[in-house]
Amino acid sequence: MIERWNRVFGSLTAEPRRQMVVALMEAPADRELSLPEAANPPYLLRDPEELYVELVHSHLPVLAEHGFVEWDREPLRVRRGPAFEEVATVFEALHAHADEIPDQLSESCQRLEERKRGCQP
Image (tube, rainbow, N blue to C red):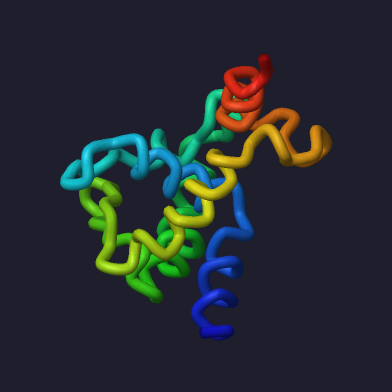
């Protein structure tokens, strides 16, 4: 069990990976998403060519290694893998308790900020 948690949290250490997981959560379960767009949040907008290289050589292999996602290179697309729920659970818990997350951890995270505003009376 400890090793599974280590894989989940280790796989979520980079923003493009977190962005892909959240984008997949928000899409229908059977939908494939285009990359690098789905990994490039509007508040961070990175160079698409640079991000493409990082996705192919780093981020996608990390998520795919544990079955969190599956991906195709041409065209570059991502979809939920057989173990996707393991990483999705982390974000579901964060979103459910957004009002309890300290501001310094939720600022500049559009989704958490929106959920926090929605939780306030």
